[in-house]
Image 1 (tube, rainbow, N blue to C red):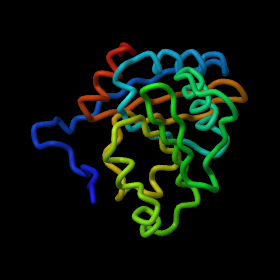
Image 2: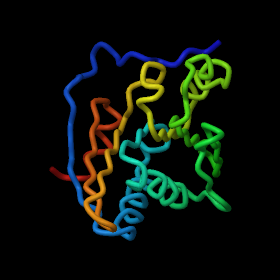
Image 3: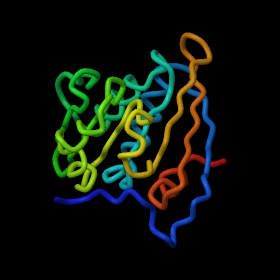
Length: 170
């Protein structure tokens, strides 16, 4: 059995870097997703999405997946827990841990093997499986300001995440 690395490397810094953005509307969400999708580091990143119901987590994921070339219907994995996607030379797994209750589900579903493999992993409601997942390369916190605007906080403490954050100045 392959094990996911749940602990950051000893030489890796634990200091978090943060960027705060405002998405004025869904077009800004789509533009951010397209910019993120263009970065080579995203192809093997673990990105977590945080926010209340209706904040825009799934909307952001749909824009990101479209920007990465996913065709067809993109459904939320709320009931399935994970939806796999594949585009040329890239495996993508979209998790939604909202209904995740039992850590045994993690092992039974093979999630440890998925997290140990190459590819992009996106997780909504990651706090429901926090003790089982590796540290996020990029944690995206989405807060609704009003019907269209979102305050977005990008947070990282990994080398991959710091490389991703370089593209959004402080």
